[in-house]
Length: 347
Ligand code: KG4
Ligand code: ZN
Image (tube, rainbow, N blue to C red; front, side, top):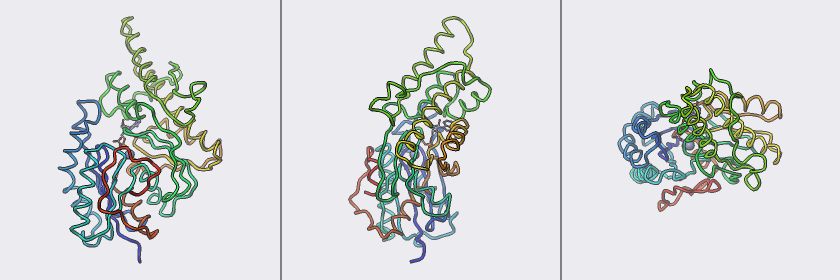
């Protein structure tokens, strides 16, 4: 069989993504985001996201098919994110995939969103994913450290956040500083003019507090420390040093993320680190990861940003890997699973 054409559907958070690939070749990656609808709430509102997916799905699908210059009947298989993510949002994608699959008479592959972030590497590099690799996935919805020995058969969750996701922490701290949503890019911008050593903010689960949580993350103490700092300034009638707070906060997040990812590489003797998720757009995280990976002799892989943020192409790419490996399609009774573990690549 020549390389299969796979259509991928992603709807786990606030991006409606339709991707189309031919094997490891990217044909289309169309994304509709409901981000503006959530802006006034300062974070993603699940019901609003689900409703927006329902409205965006059909036009996004049409645009992707037109971009790929194919007909729907040319598709060999449909892949869809069935978790983890927001339950109502996932259900829209899963329902659409089943409807399409049945109507077109095509097999359906229900795949894991987190593993999709890893599998997208095959599109960026046009070849198989080099394994083993550590993967650090950081977005508004997740902060996970994975050990991937084999993309389709051996994915292990080393650790994850016990409270806020890293992107969520950026969004909440931006709000404390009076910056708009989404906070990540705003903090990145504000931090550029600040001193990252001005305030020593806490690094969760490092040092002594790391016992039993070597690869886990916690950002709620950091967020509270920023809030206390801002309140302190206000109580004293001083202006809040936004640039310094932003730079010091960003440094704390970047330091914890990169330190833990590289500790995993070192402890488990894995020579490779892959980054994924919208927070990898952060300039300081990129710089620090580049610098420390080079020093540690670890190969750093960061897919292009449009493939790092949530998208359908990564789901299509992972689906195509399953098809090319000769895996059987998912049985039609699979369901959306908001807490799907990272170990389950295909449901
Ligand atoms: O992967 P993504 O688009 O998916 C969702 O979680 O929906 O990630 C969005 C998150 C937001 O929390 C946003 O604030 C964060 O990524 N983000 C950033 C940057 N750009 C986006 N965080 C830090 N620095 C950035 N430059
Ligand atoms: Zn994601």
